[in-house]
Image 1 (cartoon, rainbow, N blue to C red):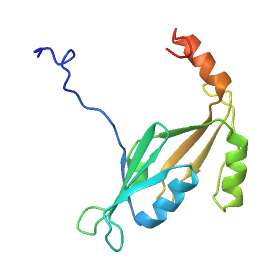
Image 2 (image 1 turned 90 degrees about the horizontal axis):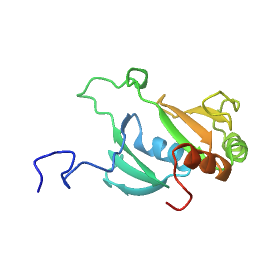
Image 3 (image 1 turned 90 degrees about the vertical axis):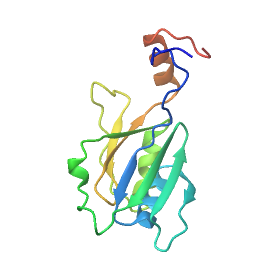
Image 4 (image 1 turned 30 degrees about the vertical axis):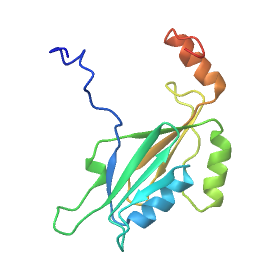
Length: 148
């Protein structure tokens, strides 16, 4: 085994954001609307922990406890970015389900479109349009061929 930490086969991986939330049950319902699938909970009543997966990612939810300082999502300084191949359709579905969703914008860094939605605890989530054309352009930009 190498003494060089960069070359070592032992390294961290599987980063999972852990969000403090007021209600794990309420947060699960929100993240499921965005396409996440519930993988596990602590089976407590009320739930204290849950882990959800999506294609290429995961998120964990931890009920904020009274003995700890109150959580403030605005102080977290974290942005969540999700990607979908059909942003307009996802936006329409979320609106139909009663979720407040911003208009789709087309900023220079995401010309294909993005929208912002806020989860029940105040965390901002950006959902970006990322279809086959965007993926092919990205692969070209980083010098990769499809299938590499």
